[in-house]
Length: 593
Image 1 (cartoon, rainbow, N blue to C red):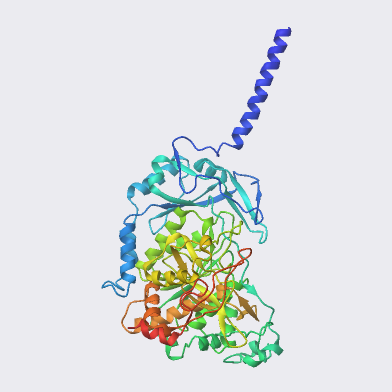
Image 2 (tube, rainbow, N blue to C red):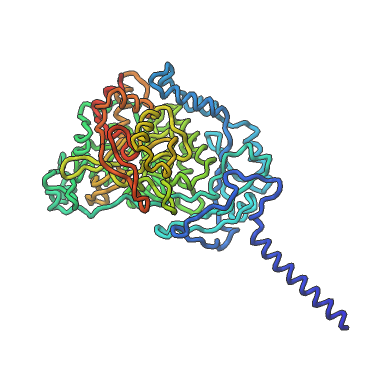
């Protein structure tokens, strides 16, 4: 009897231990990669700033869903990059000889074997609903969190942004794929990457009618008022508010250069995370400042007219104010649930669109160090494809100056502004004494990921030589320097929900410059020339050959947080204001030569 009791106790003990171990295995079943799998982007757990993000358990991993985007490896990428440099170099015989959407698509399309291998892997794991995008190089599917965890050998959590309360399903575990798939996949979106949810553009108080000098109900009476009265209109610090008319005057944009008439011209803004635009605000803004009353030609993606965002109001009002008559798109990525990755959604959708606008303005950025190189390299490939088609991508340089790591001993470059294949736009301020200075927030520095492109070697080298060794431990002295150019980033007036208000941030700078590039394209198209495409090589050449095409900004510093010494502005290019502010009528003249 005693032996039986002891045996029962031993069996119960074994069952108890087994149950505990089963729970441990269940909790960690996705964390240990199988022997026949390989890491794709990362091999170590992802670092998460817990001051910014809160980690929650997912209530039901069987019902919660995530959208996965598989970037399939493309072909002929070295040839693509060489082609882009040649068609973007004004000194090359191939300058401006772009390819069509279909030509680029066929040139770089993945091997059929790559597409089939990924499709078969998904089918073998019970994932039967997926879509190969029209571009032929992405596969997208929506699956349960449980299925995604099994597929990628990771464990997901619900990441909640402490400030905005927006949430995303993401994993901190480095994901893996079967070894035989490693050579077919660039990256998988919807696993590790969390977007940088920066505060919206700096919003000032609603402008009082006494400050403006005009009655606010003039909106309702549709009065055509050409410009602000500068003497009656100043921000709290005494610096002037900026209307479209004043911005054009500061950058020497005359009526002749805004005579946009070519039907082949086009431009767009991109919006993320429920940022919509109001046609009513746009119309009233145009009326308020005596602008031509244009409408948005095309809205791609969701839009809620009665729920506009300040960011969108800023972007659409100023790109159209700078470039009247140019057909304008709003490309909207909703970001409506935890499974979406907004920037990636935008990128994938555009990669499948054969009718891309010639100029695209994006006020979006992230810390370069927070993104895997595999991801940034693939995004760079998409930018190269746009450039190969003669399209121009404009990014704001960010509102975090040089950026700064937690140890305060290194700058943190911003991305995608640090890409060699986009035009990065920094910020300047018009002061009450009439001077223009670099904005402290203006994102700028040198990339840690991307080497210095040939088109800016002299400018960056000259600036680094001027530093004479100072800050040398804080940045990569061989990296791509940004921004390339600047525009106004403080006290820019928008109309939002029938109210006039000042906005700050390089989010204002990017659409202003993008609109001016559309004017350059229009003049080139009217002149029988191709669009500017990747503008950077021509821009830097003009700066060297015709320096009066820019208003050089030689004062300002973009230090950030505990990195108390940032880069300083100087004569010539600098990583605060780039080449400076366009002297537009002079610049456009040299763009037509």
